[in-house]
Image (cartoon, rainbow, N blue to C red; front, side, top):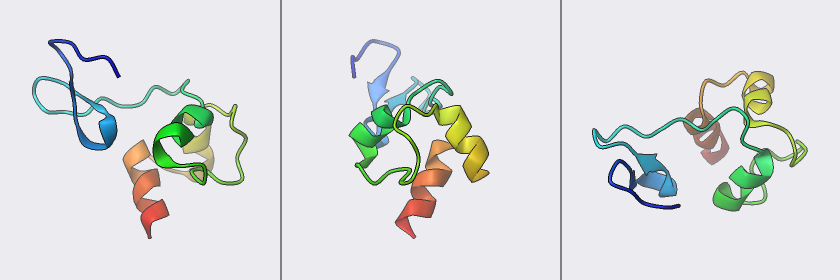
Length: 73
């Protein structure tokens, strides 16, 4: 991820704003891109070309953090 004066790399290589808040993943991010970061088993059973927003709807989740926490259990 490119760094600039408004963004520093934070937890899980996600971008943090200057106030420390981690930006939300865009709804049009593909599951394949998320698998690059979170492993090939992330969102198992879903197509790699599915959009992140659709994944959240189908899983009934509010955020990427929620999905990652569920997976860790």
